[in-house]
Length: 527
Image 1 (cartoon, rainbow, N blue to C red):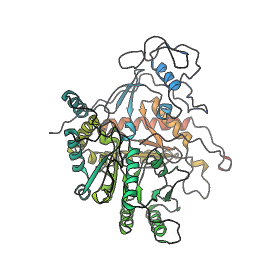
Image 2: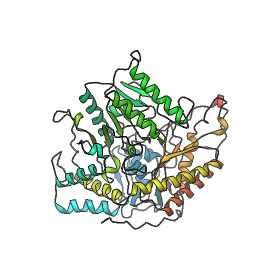
Image 3: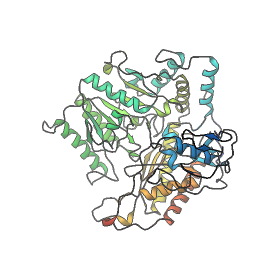
């Protein structure tokens, strides 16, 4: 019998909204947060060292020899800036210290509460600390079962695999193999690429502009920002910023024709590849859904040429887009599916599911010490079952369509909102500079500085959002699938208020001919 989580109350507006913080400067420091070399002693004011704060009482010596004091949230942020690498990302734009969380809500060490529309970059399908997830983890811990088993068979793993296969497209589930990978999506991408290269004996790869598949070498090479790789880049259909300047069905048709021409032209310089990897909705690329007809066309193109089709469902899976798996919208059955994030129920887990005909690996061809994460498998089983039994994918589709409609209405009153798009509860709002559009521009230039200001204004109002897209000008909403109507209204109200505040504070920009490119924040470590 399905367990229904009580709808959490929508938190009130934070009693003392934090001052929006500025973007990191060239030194990687965020104004408003104590940085290395700060001379004042932290006393713990503004957050206290209460339960769950993570602070260390008293003074202690940092590795450099300088004294670090305090247990307050500012002290914790300062120590993070002293100790963690310059590669940290979310911590720069979201200077908060979470200590408790439930559902949509996070409470910081400073006592403020936030509505979390980042959800661990889409990992938290059921939000924070859902009861069925906690119960599944507790059950494993109380059972005395081993927590580390490499790739040995266990009852927990068997239950997870059975539940996972029950959710897959039937044609794939009937003839599938699963490879448990290292616990990050990027390792599952690496495994998928290695798999199709092994199975076909070919080396090249087809990928798409705007793609994001992870941060390890092979996954990054298949992503949109790769500078020098063995990957052939194909145009991804984009209605708002169409690479062919047409948009709509015509743009998608030209993208498909370009793909066919490249593969069939003996002088194209592109040999038959080992596989094609694609996202049914580009997430980090700016929340761009692939047209269903185009996805079906890619399936026909690859099938006719014996090219394995790999679909990256790391962020789109487990109900996020309004279907359990995003490929289901188009009816496409890929040869390989890459899965992570939500399948672990908030804990690290990543797998590759593929047709048995591709299972050409030798033992140990792809391995990982932590591919047997029992707690993640238990949490994942509970999450998959809860989403399936409670029809949360359908709920995401219905609620997401309503939110998109309300955001499109908001866009009509704000020229800086260039486009609102998405699928289910995977939503993007692209911010632009309408005054800087040239006569030949099919869409106004992106406005990354405005997007950053909106993100900061959202945080000041107790709303956590992420940025993405080509120029980090797309505000992204990834709320949990358990989002209630009341919570959705609160999210939209806070976003609308933040957008208006950022517009009011906006500094006039130079003319298009003299406009300098805005700094582009590094993408978050989504995989």
